[in-house]
Length: 560
Ligand SMILES: Cc1cc2nc3c(=O)[nH]c(=O)nc-3n(C[C@H](O)[C@H](O)[C@H](O)COP(=O)(O)OP(=O)(O)OC[C@H]3O[C@@H](n4cnc5c(N)ncnc54)[C@H](O)[C@@H]3O)c2cc1C
Image 1: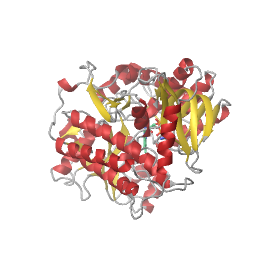
Image 2 (image 1 turned 90 degrees about the vertical axis):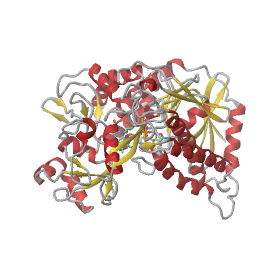
Image 3 (image 1 turned 90 degrees about the horizontal axis):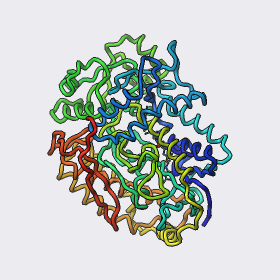
């Protein structure tokens, strides 16, 4: 087994992880930045499209207090006010720093271009280029990280277990995906920046490595999760016709620039029925639009594939070309001509508001363990505003790196018992697979459908109870599954660890969704269809022995 030592270990190299590594290095620490994919090229950051919310005030007067008020309102009373404040207050600092690093924010005659996005009260969202903001942010951070001698980067290393002792988190265990070689990492502080969990769902905007590792690692080590029931469903994910080589959430930039009309299967504007708006602009928040589309479908007014129509046919072709020239050509290659046809859209799992519970120093309940980015829960409450996730990754990443550096524990030996247990689990997988059975493959195929059908945008007690029972049974089936003897490029081994993380994250989402007997933001219950003041509470989950224990916070007084 390879043994490695560092000051600060950062798990996950998206926006949060790369920023954390920069902050730790600039505070004088050695940082080890590892990713199960390639550094700065896996996860959600590189996929982000067009919106980064920060109260820069370049398009019109703005102030972080206004951004904060919008964030709290969108969060439907469940935001952690201190985290939301940190996000909104520090977003402009990070966005201007990215500007100095030449990320290439789009500009107009007023300065950095900022557009309106649903739920924001000001033109606040900056971008680099249509559909190209995430790649530019990731590339800029990769460059900064590469310049820091104190940051060591290791791609294709999957962290499977955190190693803890009586004093807290002392490092991690993982393995190199290609070689299959186990690695033990000793660290003075550890930051989880391994992203969210939307790959758990059948319809999702995720890449392969957004499967809930953050939450599993945190639970297993003894940290707490908060409000796991709040999975954001992006309302207008592409549904039909078939679209190859383009992102399913690509209609968002179209709506920022061109508006567009959202129509039910009978050709009616329907959003106004749900939020009282005039349906003209693109202003309705994601939770309400998701609810509205699915309600129309449930009432028999959906489109042929079960969604809504998105139409730009009322716009002159010249406007479409001026706004999206090259993209329009790509769409044509897919047989989609927006000037003469509508497309079908429907909700798609996109982001996770819940996550690891931290304070404003990004500290978890376990000493020495920090978290940052989408892995963290609480800042966005029950519903996230468009454009808040990238600043969350950058701001929280920076804070986690700085705080971990300032508070790093003295170097100590790796906890032997924890390391032995992690190694034993790894070695137990590398046994001949049972002939004629593909337990791992079958579970992997089953999970996304189960989550979509029973823990999706509309929920009820019967479905959630059935899902919880099945998820627990699946964990038992997985526990003894083996991946074959050869560790080199063993994809079954990777699937086993992915599934272990996915199933425990899925259990946490389902448990919290069953407990929350109301409808609020992204969590909608058929059997409890209204928001209840008595439920203005956070749900906290922690591991106790081998089960998940859930508790409620006292009533919150955050403005909804
Ligand atoms: C298609 C898409 C478009 C989006 N558009 C926008 C937008 O326009 N504006 C906005 O604000 N937000 C947007 N978001 C959301 C935003 O991109 C994310 O919330 C944010 O980038 C998360 O950053 P992160 O660093 O926390 O996680 P990520 O960028 O997801 O990085 C996590 C990293 O952790 C690695 N990892 C996971 N598990 C392990 C493990 N066990 N060991 C080692 N490494 C591991 C992954 O490989 C990955 O590289 C979008 C998301 C998607 C999917």
